[in-house]
Length: 439
Image (cartoon, rainbow, N blue to C red):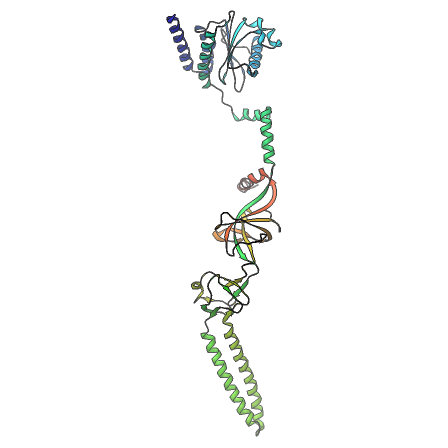
């Protein structure tokens, strides 16, 4: 008894070793349907392969197969029915009564009364048939042998190429149809087109404090972001040159006034003095106008706040001693309660924006806060911004009751029209492909 068990085990190991050493699928199929008889006595065996083409690939005692033969067609139909039967399991004892009527009627024409059906993993199935029933011990040995054959068949499993995958999806099964329908619905799901841009909180309707004259800034009287009242001194221009001009104009006016006084006295006794008096009067009026103009220009060198607000500029040291041209902006006077959002939409990511569109600001300094705004206007022309990029300036009005602090920087999400999700996902790749291909 022990010798029989040892012989059986040695035979099983030998078959598994031979299966692992097979050079190709045909050689392995020959071993499966013919040499398995050393371990399990049977009269007929058939190997069925799954994969790209589901078919009987080997029969015991035959070197070449004829796919159109009636026996082959019947065997293929039996294997397909067993593979589709969810109650078949990994292995089972089989006879004619287990098959549907259209297949069982031909059983006696092709196979002995008792068969053993073994599942080879996902690689196929093996059918062994003989005249006597199968024992439980033989069933267990057959299952172990089938497990080894399945492992050996896996290395010769056909690889699915893209054509087969395409054909499978073009002729989808119910589960694949559901997946395709879900993907289609997801691709067509509407989503709001949006772009992230750099943004800043800027004053609304600010007053620009410009240099009244060309000159050098002598003193900045306020600090950056300082609140000021109306009439508060803001900055002064250097008055050295204008002070000299004003003093010279005043001296010339005094001299003209003295000359007019002398000529007016002479005009009382001399007719020629009347002509000189008229000339001196004209000269006096000219010098008076020049002196008054110099005084007014001197007063303009002292710039004060025309209204209450906050002065916005970079740094006092950046401006003191700096030469400015007439009309050059020095600082901005803004009302901190009247602010708006300025965003710069990159030209490469420009979307269709209209007044009234939605904008959301995410401040850099407050990661948990956000502010809603409404687009007021969009520049029609892109201009260079930081980094040398071209961008469209977008102005938006805050709709929240509490607006953000003036000067706050952050990221704004600018919203456009509703588009399908597939358009949102493929917009940038399609744009890059179009630019590269030139269509």
